[in-house]
Length: 233
Image (cartoon, rainbow, N blue to C red; front, top):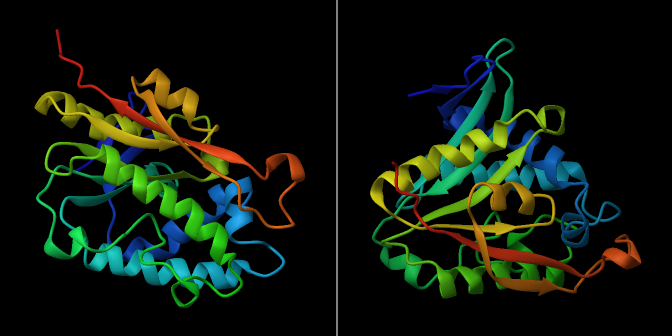
């Protein structure tokens, strides 16, 4: 299964367990400069190596034992074979029994100090991931909706349409099936998501930050967005 741009510069493939190292690299390259990431994983206490080991374990588990409806996709630069971007879509599904009782959000899982990388800001992680988990429970009907659970693009490939490819891949299926799609937006992603038809329906504010976070960035908002299916003419 693959999908190409009109220029065939990039194409989509489904991720495998062999991609874990590359997923970790793209994830950390994309998110470590972000204020919310710095708040949760301060550079002075939570090293790249610590985060990398944590993510390697979590991505490995998710790719080897994906949850119901969970699929990971990657955008590959055709000429070089490099991974430019990846995403986790959760397709409509009947929740497994454990999903009803466990809060599994992003790479956080059931978070406490023991399930986070060494040096993480536990309070900030609980506030951010916990807030997003509550929003998913409020807005997502798993049996009926598509959920964009994670999207990351290597900074070297930003602005080349890689994220849009991954988003449109799932949205085209949602439109064919007449289903809504859910996404959580930071300021960086908000304009693109609006362009693709998502609408803000709610927000969650995070105020817990580390001393390394600039004072004017110690509060930030994640916007909760829903996209209605678009009927094809």
